[in-house]
Length: 489
Image (cartoon, rainbow, N blue to C red; front, side):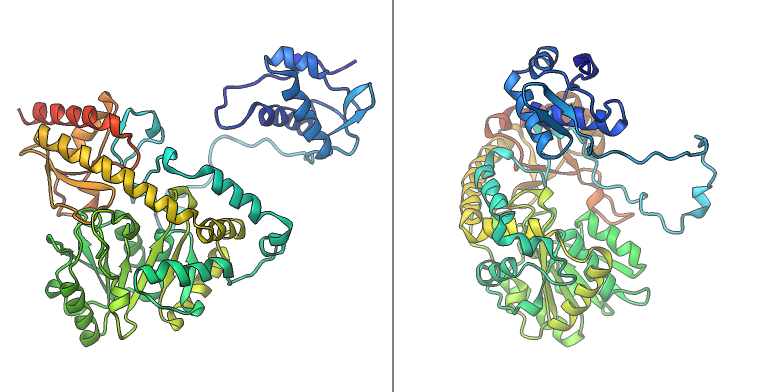
C-alpha cells in the first residue's frame, strides 16, 4: 500500500515555491523515519488533490527528489522511497531537563547584548509608511541580471574558484573591478595588496578598531554618529572622545590632542548628511600628518550623490598614507549582501587579512564572484543611475510634504543621500513619538541612539526614503505631523 496522502500537509509559506515546499515535506518525512525505504509514495494525482496544487507541481517535486536519491521511479508502478535515501543517525540519549544547570549570569565573561541596536521591527515591510534607513526597495533592484550573474558564478568555468578554500585571499575578479572602476570614482589609486574584502562596512570598522586600538589609546568619533561604531569601540576598551559635528561635519580644531585614531564620515555624515568641504578635509589631513594620528574614513553613501557630484574622498587627498578607507556595496545593491572593502597601506592590510582569517577566512566565494560579474557587466552602474533618478523624485516629494506640514529638517543634505535628519517640536520625545506612529502604520527612527551617552537629544529623528514608494510619502508625512502636533499640545 502507498503512504497515505494525508501524511503530508502544507503550512503557510510565502518564502518558497510550492514545488520546494513539497520537496521539503517529503525530505522531512524520510529523514524523521515516518517514510521508510521501499515504501510507495502517494501518486502525484492523489497528493496534488490532497494538497490543492497542480499535478505537474507534484511531479516536478518528485523528479527532483529522484535526482537527489530520496526517491526512485519504478516504471508504471510509481515512486518509492529509495533504499539508499539519506537518514538521520539515531542516538540513545539521557533525558534532558528543561532547567538550565549553568548560571550564565556568572559564566559570561563579556556582554554584547547590552548594546541595543536601533529599534526596528522585523516585520517593517508590513507597515504602510516605512521611513526607515538602510533597507532596500525590491522594486528598484535588478533581480533578473543578479540571478543571471549568480548562475554564471556557479557555472563550470568558475566552479574551482568557488570550491577552493583560498584561505586569506579574495576573489581577484572583484578586487580588480574595485581597483579599476570603483576607486577611481573617488580619485583613489591602490594596488591589490592594499585592498581587503569584508562582510560589509560594520565588519571593516570592527577589523580596523581591533588592530589600531588598545586600552591605552584614544579614538575620536563624531557626535552624533553611527551607533554601531560606538558599540565596536566600547569592546576595545579604548578612551573614546565624541566631537560634536556642525553643518560641515567634524571640526578638526576640536579633536583631542592625544587622539590616536579619528573615525569620520566626511561624505553624507551619519546621520546628519553633512558633507565636509574640501578645505576642511585638507586641514584634517594636515593635522593628521603633524600629530601622527590615523583617520578611518567611512565613505558613507558616496554613490548616492545625485544632487551634486561627490567631494573627493579623504583617501584621495592623503599624501602620507594616514587614511584607512571603508567602502560598502550594501546601500547601492541590497543590505543583505554584506559585502564591503578596506583600502589602506599594505602593512595594515596584511594585519587585517590575518585577523579576518582567524574569524571567517574570507567572505563566501559565490557572493564575491556574483558581485564581480554584476559590477563588471555594467549592471551596477545601471542600478546606481536608476536609484539616483527615483531617489531624486522621492526626495523632492518628501521635501515638499515636510514643508507643507511644517516639519523641520536640520541641514540640507545638498549632495543627496537617502534620508533626512529632523528636529521635532519643543518638548516632543522622538522615541515616544516613534512608538505612537506605529499605530498609524508609520515607522521612523528616533535619534537618541546616535548620540554619545549622557548627551542624548530626544527631539531628533531620521526619515529615510529608500524603502517607501513615492505615492505613500505625503500621507505618511501628514501622519507624522499630526502626531507631533498632538504631542506638543
